[in-house]
Image 1 (cartoon, rainbow, N blue to C red):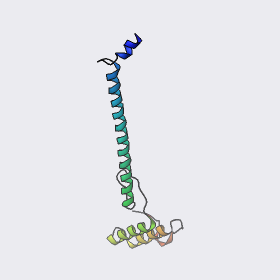
Image 2: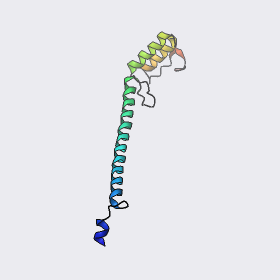
Image 3: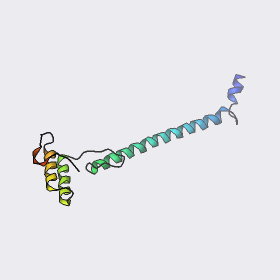
Image 4: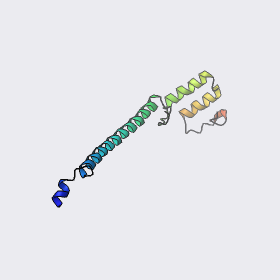
Length: 114
């Protein structure tokens, strides 16, 4: 009986068909999982690189890297040149960039704004 049960178990309802189906299915599931992990990793890495290449601008759904002090001064200068801010605000913000912790009250009133 023992020999007959395991020796002839490969028919339509036996172990051999089920074994191969589950083996191949499990392998395909594993491959799919690895492919998904690689795709997610590449997506996150490309967003991270994009955020770094833009110079501090956040990528959609990506990380934000604050611009360096020189970059911030350049952006501030561009805003002043375009007329988005006036000279007083430009001077206030420039002082804040160059000395963020130094009490810098001065003649301009409250820092920040708009």
